[in-house]
Image (cartoon, rainbow over all chains, first blue to last red; front, top):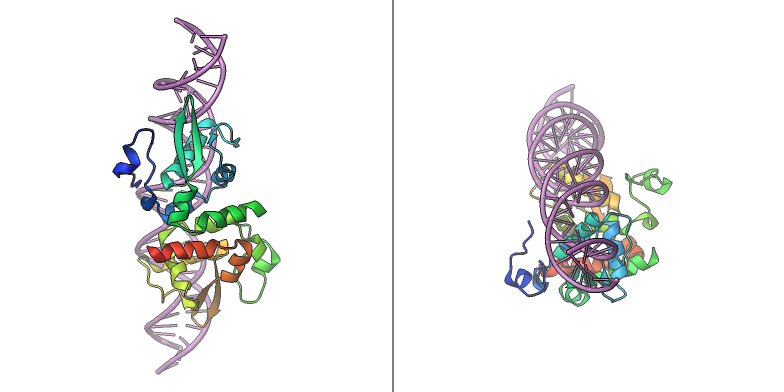
Length: 114
Length: 114
DNA sequence: AGCAAGGTTCGATGGTCGTCGTACAATGGT
DNA sequence: ACCATTGTACGACGACCATCGAACCTTGCT
């Protein structure tokens, strides 16, 4: 299912299962973005700053939070890295723009209105 | 679940549960587009012509086909109308562009490469 | 009237998803 | 050393989803 099998996705120092840019799949990204909670996460990250899971307040418990961040990470939407006890998340904006030009911008634009 | 309760969505002459333009929801559209078979349908309709269900050949049986077209219709991605014994489908391109500018174009662009 | 073609409806099935709670792990401060 | 903080892992549960087959409906043709 996951297709996180490439070297670049798993091996390197600090990463935990990020797909390479050219491995990001459209259906996967759309799927990942089709959940309201995950859309909120993306909106929060759209400002550009790295945010810990806890700093985005969501109406779900911790373990569910972990789940949503993992879905976004495995789809290639966000990047996660460890920093002390927390995990910092950021949007893979450049990677997404490379792979699917205009997509993220369109989604964020649609989100700004609502 | 469906939120297809408005007058404009259900009542009129030829329509069967199309959401009004301003009722189209982003998460619903993304969800609808997150299935490979439905993406194939969208690609086929992107040329601009109305197509019957049968004229798009998909690796599923009829009833599954009906299911996918309904998902796309209820999400506001396509429009369906009766014509004789068949049902003609078309992309709601203008409506989607109004509601989520650039989104459809980005998706279609991403699809063209793959 | 009879029939073929194109779609829908319904029930069933197996798989995935979102959610939770509990237990666990890692880090940093006191 | 202890503990609080932050997050993960795992198991469970209910809901939803994609798929199929069979029965049915509608339209158009002969």
